[in-house]
Length: 163
Image: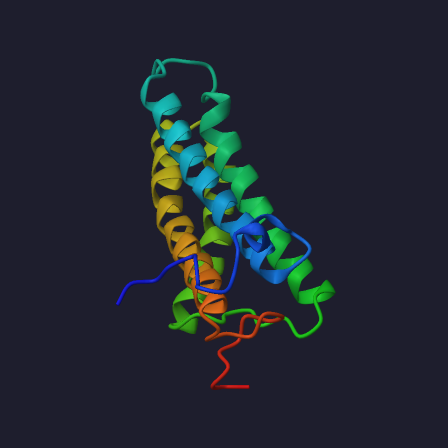
């Protein structure tokens, strides 16, 4: 059936305790919800801007750069600091590897849109960033719900059937 954050024997405290993997995953879920809001804000700021403006609205270029840099920095830190880090624990793994590649590509497009002073390129960048961030929300929702239903390891997020 459906997924649930609440299991019969667990409380909600672990969702806000960022010392554990579940709390960190829940925090990333919230971050990607905020990143989706930032991307929508960037699109709205650019869409409402006068096309003859000297430079694009700050929200239009800052939001994709900020969210992409945070995403890539978290990925880099996870690879280098977290022991036993499983980079793509949710199926399909290839799709989430593509998500990381797309975020890096859209960071470059945001820089290019700012350098070219292109409202359209920045709007497209913000719009297409919504897709990877929605997939990241899905990934963290699946991780948290599967850990809470004891299908995944609490330390790494790997499926218990693979351990």
